[in-house]
Amino acid sequence: MIEPLPDLLVAPIVRTALAEDLGRAGDITAQACIPADARLTAVFATRRGGVVAGLSCVRLALAELDPTVSFTPLSADGQVVTAGMSLAQVRGNARSILTAERTALNLLGRMCGIATMTQDYVDAVAGTRVKITDTRKTTPGLRHLEKYAVRCGGGMNHRFGLDDAILIKDNHVAACGSVGEAIRRAKAFAGHLIKVEVEVDSLVQLQEALAHDPDVIMLDNFTLSDMREAVAITQNRVILEASGGITLDTVRDVAETGVDVISVGALTHSVKVLDIGLDALEG
Image 1 (cartoon, helix red, strand yellow):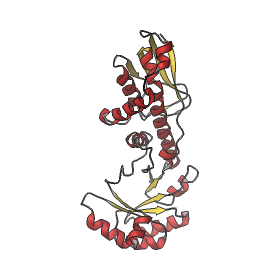
Image 2 (tube, one colour; image 1 turned 45 degrees about the vertical axis):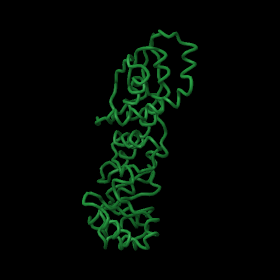
Image 3 (tube, one colour; image 1 turned 90 degrees about the vertical axis):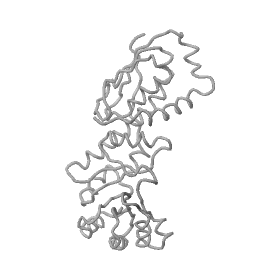
Image 4 (spheres, one colour; image 1 turned 90 degrees about the horizontal axis):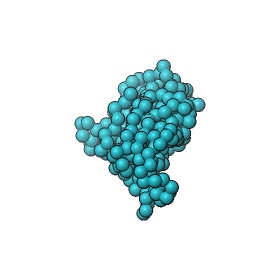
């Protein structure tokens, strides 16, 4: 179970998606084929197992089109479900339900896919101390939803945007002239609540970064042996984050080096949508 996102954050995303789908004339298929007063009862059901995330998107898509349509959740965000399970039941005007169907499924399926992949990574490192996090490699306009889905899958969120933490990457270092100078400038700028993280690509840069006391050091595309050496060098003086091309096949090995955090961009940029469908039960 997880605290759902406020409707205030989700509703504008759903509304934009519906407007994109409705176009200039609305759902002309429903208008042509379905009587205006037809009723429908249906369930949103999984075709394969996974982790639920995004039920509020379904509820809000239906409510935006027709507040009289009833929405009954049969599962909860963060819940593990098996193939064939019903996630929610809807009942009401058939045109409204069918018009909202694709928008609801697009958002629900993507979020469930992210939550499911995240849980796969979390399960793969079970028993280690490492935390799995996402990145800013999210779909434009969907960041709140996608990062929420990561939490539903048992992962943690990296920074949400450019304004909530300082993350010095290779191009910042190049512009500043050195890792040390970049950290010095960042710490001079940062308020007392802003953390400073720096990305390093070698053990030499790691040593330079340590001398300037950042809050977090990201080990970018380090080998396993270099990660282990980085852990030995730092001796818990700083949080170590491993990043760069980490897959389900390699994440356990990375976790066992002793790093604190593993960030995985694939959780949001390469996810497979969970197969979910709307199944009519009766009129």
